[in-house]
Image (cartoon, rainbow, N blue to C red; front, side):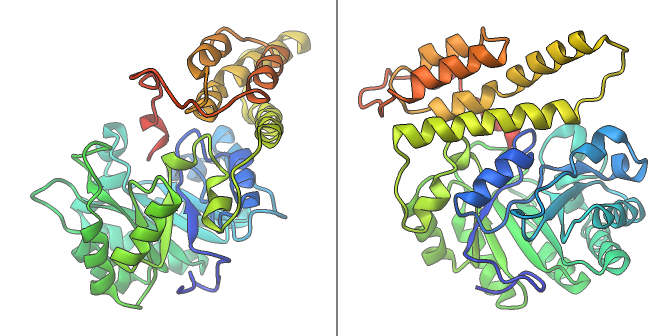
Length: 356
């Protein structure tokens, strides 16, 4: 494997940065299960530049576990991105990752996310200015192109390489595809052949199993494999990629409980209260909002287990920490893989909002 800047990672498996998911507790969990790198969810450069208190709370990380600490920025203005990256470095960032792949309209219409793929020169200037301002390795995540008629990933690789990019991740779908259709791994192979060993290539898209990851490396030659939705509710996948076992019911229950408790602390500390509330009301509101924001994780953890639909229905009515802890202990300690799932029973699971 090629190093990323000065960092030689312990293996080739990377957690994808996912909006609303890649907060500190989940990143730490993925690292502990074997992931080699876990970038943050996308963080607004404008928010950092303006020293927005809510944005700054996203910068918290575990200095003991998160090594190296990769912080993902999104934005379209090179000067603002560079100034934001300087602030990120002051808060501990060791790698600056730039989101040039997010397909969401509210991001692309500002020239950020995959909107940067429509302006390769500006994309290159973003990398160049961040690198000059911080001295840190700068990585980028792109898509294969804007649409089927504009697959300019090789041009982007040339421009970003000339700007000094330390690694390039590509989600092998276009912006127009969003998360539909199938990722075209042949494009990752084209990208790796084009770049050679100039800098590492990170393949992304449709890696769901240990076998998928091996096949991506074998068929594309990519240096690293980035895993997104397959890790949701299954951080043990990173352990399995390294030859480890699936979790027992007891371990699954313990990890979900620990993740939930850490999420509750993290989300309460990250919350900004605009209104003045008495301490008891504030604590109650923090608890309720933390429970609600963890519901998606619980749905993902339950995916594929017998009785998952009934469990999600129960969780969706939970409002207190005790409600959740009682429900998850009862469910996960006795949960078995659903060998005969009802067709369509998992359709309510929505991964799209997590994938930037």
